[in-house]
Structure formats: C-alpha cells, structure tokens
Length: 320
Ligand SMILES: NC(=O)c1ccc[n+]([C@@H]2O[C@H](COP(=O)([O-])OP(=O)(O)OC[C@H]3O[C@@H](n4cnc5c(N)ncnc54)[C@H](OP(=O)(O)O)[C@@H]3O)[C@@H](O)[C@H]2O)c1
Image (cartoon, rainbow, N blue to C red; front, side, top):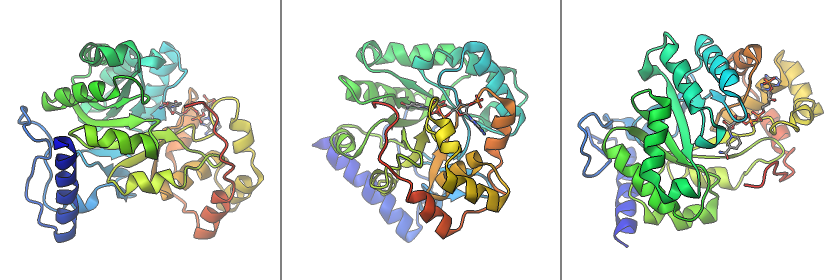
C-alpha cells in the first residue's frame, strides 16, 4: 500500500511538473545515497519519453538520455559481439543491448573499454534472468558489473517476469542508490504483468523491452506503457533470425523502401522510431550495423505508417 501511494505521488509529481513546467532541480530517487545520481533540470519533465530526432535520443524518467537506435547482441559469440560493438561505436552508434543469458557481457565491456568513445557517451543495457539470478539478485548484479567492467551499468532490466521478480527489482533499486546502475527497466512485461508489478516497487521503470515488428505490433501495449512515462524498446525488429527474409522481403515494405531509396531494414526501423519505439537490431555485419544507424535522411508519411500498421498479424516469433 505504502509503495502504491509513493508510485501515485511520483506519477502526480511528474504530471504536475510537466504541466506547469516548474520542475526545479529535483532528485526523483528518494533517499538516494549517491550525490552523483542524475537529477532533473527545470523543463526536463515535459521531455520524458519524447524522441529528439536531432540529438537521436530520448529523455528517460530516470533523468538520463538514451540513444533511440543501437545494436542488439543476442546470439553473438564473444568475438562476433566484440567486433559488432566495435563496428557500432566506430559508425557513431552508442546504444548496446546485452544480457547475462547472451553470455557476451564481457565482450561488450572489452569493446567499450577499448574504444576511443568516452564512456559517458555510451549507453549499455544488460538484464538479469529468472531462477538463480532472481533468487540471489545482489550477486547477479555484481557479476554483471564485474563482467562488463565499465564502472556502472546504464540500464539493467529484468529479462522476464517470474518468481522473485519484485525481490530482484528491489535489489536493482539498491544499486541505483549506490550509483552503480543508472536506470531500471523490464522486459517481456505486458499490461497485466505491469499492473501487478508496478505498485510493488519504488522506482518506476524507465523502459520496457518487448517483441515488436510489423507482424507483431503490440498496438494496445505500446501506448499503455508510453502513457506511464515509460519508454518502449522493441526486440526482433526484423522478426528475429529465421524470419528476417519474410519481413525484409515483404512487398508492402519493399515498395515503401523503393519510394524512399532506402532498404527494407531502414523502413522497418524508421517505422518503429516514428511510433516512439527505440530499436536495437541485432547484427554481426558491419555494413548492416552502419545501415541500421542511417535512419534520419527520410521520413515515412502517415499513409505509409498506416500501410505498415495494416501488416499486423499478431504473429509472435518467440514464446515470451
Ligand atoms: N528481451 C528479450 O527477451 C529479447 C529477446 C530477443 C532479442 N532481444 C534483443 O533484441 C535484439 C534484436 O533481436 P535479434 O538480434 O534477435 O533479431 P533481429 O534484430 O530481428 O534480426 C537479426 C537478424 O537480422 C539481420 N540483419 C540485421 N540488420 C540487417 C540489415 N540491415 N539487412 C539485412 N539483414 C539484417 C542479422 O543478420 P546480420 O548479422 O547478417 O546482419 C540477423 O540475422 C537482440 O539482439 C537482443 O539484444 C531481446
């Protein structure tokens, strides 16, 4: 009950400050122990969740800015992952998504440390997994910090709902207060899961990462999450391995791509961005990685967005 009241007060504060624009410097994390914790500047509340297409970033409810396009590393081996993250950083990309389950956090960390890009310009997301990690969350979080070895984690997600998920999230909150994690989020949480979960935690998640592509669009879930001041990020933007040729060869998407002189991959990613969904396409090909960042020289019309929206088949490509 106490947490529900805190969550309601925080939501009311966000809404009030956004409405009247009176947000003086304010720390949203009550009882924060670390003076370096990000605080809001006046006017920032109104920006939460809005994509800045000039800066290519979005302001999170944690007070941090996150790039709106980056690289997913699912199924990349250590070497592939190191090379892909290096290619991303060389091509100007700054957002990387990894997870304990991908077994490549150490490779992400090495690539970040070995790059010439200042650490504070890079945004690394990792995730902890249900089971043993949720049972011993402090150890799981410390393991991620140790494997990445990049000082702090920009964002940590619960990979799935599951037993002990609230316990695991409350442990992540403690690391936020220590300044070792900047922002928190969830993955594979839909409306029912969020309704149950949110009243039980203190820090509203900054992001929810779910499966989203033209054949599985989540058109009811996305606005529900966004209206909570939470940013949505899509996984499997091209349908995931085994499905990409179908999506990248779709005749509607191909004709839109042809009209703009871009690739189908770019159309799909741009469609996500125009719907306010952050993209993390997976790739081990430096040319694809570069192409997937080049999304700002064209804009889809409302009619084109509607054409792609009409491709929805509610066709999930993975079980979670
Ligand atoms: N939270 C979760 O439960 C969850 C689940 C799944 C995935 N994820 C995250 O979401 C990310 C994206 O998903 P994913 O990587 O599995 O699938 P995806 O992004 O839908 O597809 C990746 C495939 O697309 C190909 N590809 C990438 N860019 C391309 C381009 N420009 N042209 C043609 N082909 C292209 C890649 O091949 P090349 O290597 O040849 O480029 C790869 O085979 C993951 O990497 C992971 O970080 C999260």
